[in-house]
Image 1: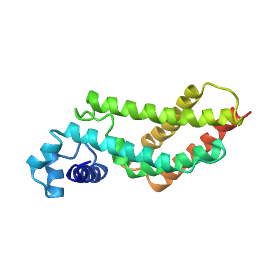
Image 2 (image 1 turned 45 degrees about the vertical axis):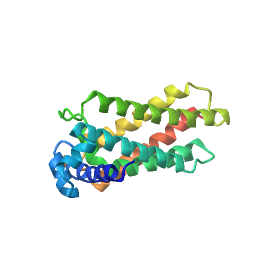
Image 3 (image 1 turned 90 degrees about the horizontal axis):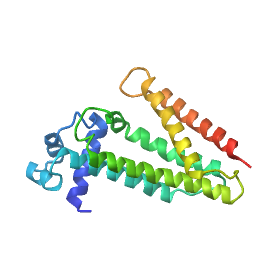
Image 4 (image 1 turned 180 degrees about the horizontal axis):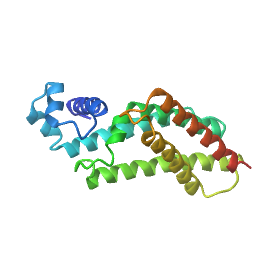
Length: 198
């Protein structure tokens, strides 16, 4: 990736994660980075294309972190390890999480929606592969791995949503709320795996 383009994406991530996507303007990003507006618009013709670049970068980093993660001999250890990565990313990019559902055309563009769906599909495939490996090793009963992975990921997302909706009514959940969310996701993972065991 072009160094200037990468610099702009990093600057946008910094501002988006601090203020949220919908409250950030292209002018503010240009000012933060001391780049001219024509230079910014050369790489990203509009805010929507910049949001797309940011989301792509975050997901690319996430999947890179997954690929570097040591996969453990048991499904439980692997999923709990992956859950740690997810939790780190959730904390780091929480303000971006809040932006979804906001009535902002750059967040609701077909291109951004398509990218998010592609990344969710990739995450689903990763988890289905972990379940398939455990099944092949005789660790869990035969099951539809795709369906089980989807149920697992939706359950985790449900716990995350409850944390966001039922926090202290503040913009950001406090450390106690985040810790509780993470503990519930770990408990869910253990119960889920126990239910699949041979």
